[in-house]
Length: 227
Image 1 (cartoon, helix red, strand yellow):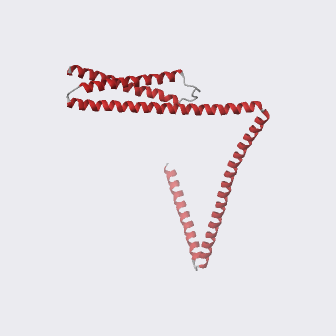
Image 2: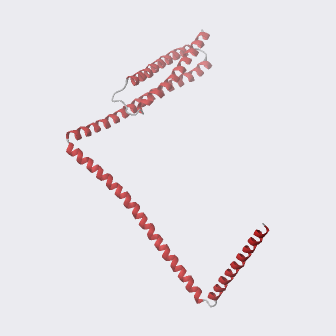
Image 3: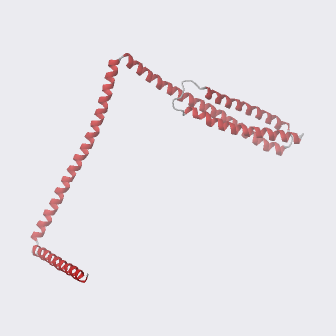
């Protein structure tokens, strides 16, 4: 009796785990109906089939849990019953989680469908209004075009304002550098001997440049001679 009960318990648990895995797979498929672009105004046949499969599996798992409970109640081994009790509690928890997940997905799909239907109805009302009032539709179109032109003008005005500001900053910087240069020249002219010293430095640079140029020319002539 004990061996038979153990075999039945193992088989039922195996079926329960397989159905739990299958439920997760169906949830993945079912959740995609809420993210589908252009969701249908009413549940499609495929959606109804997927939801019915989930409901059917949940009912089968409920039946399996009831069978496991009866088997557990019929056992007398305390150690074995304690371990199996934990397994049974886990199956119940997973079943409850999956039932809540199904309710959440149903609400998500319903909300997405209501939103899509609302937007579709609004567009239909707008199209119907424009069809029955062509003059107003033309006026609305002109207002929309004017709004786009105004936004374009605002963008251009912003770019021009930035360009003018940058140009003004460049002018201020040029004036600042000119003032600094004038101050340096004025300060140098007021120090005795600075102008003559600057002149000597310039003359020495010119002399050094002439010597260096002459040396380079001489080397080139020698190189050409030996070639």
